[in-house]
Image (cartoon, rainbow, N blue to C red):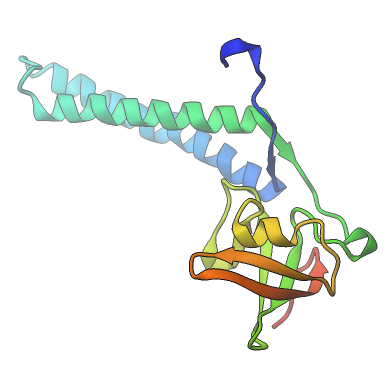
Length: 166
């Protein structure tokens, strides 16, 4: 990085780091060799300037190489965090947190790294508005979440390393 500034570590769960490593392996062993073969075959057809397969293949290789660069940088800076039970009832990275909104609706989310969020699994980034509002706070605290529609108060009703049953 310019000026000698070091890039900050990237917090991630063990499962998230394994998913990133799995993607690197797949791109290196399967995707990139397949595209290299396609480009080689297309190049053998002659004039490359009007060869759509060749042009598309080279573009796809650049995309794969950019993604590999991003993934390798993330893995190099990864700070794998295995969550422990909440200390002093405080919400931390990797925890499942259950909140209750102003209408009494309860919902649980897991706070994960920004590269591993999955809304279908209710895993949100610790840097999201909700993540920032609850991280470091104690169970029972009422926090304000900045939503697009405006601020909303929620109560932290539970925090745990295990997914709540309901």
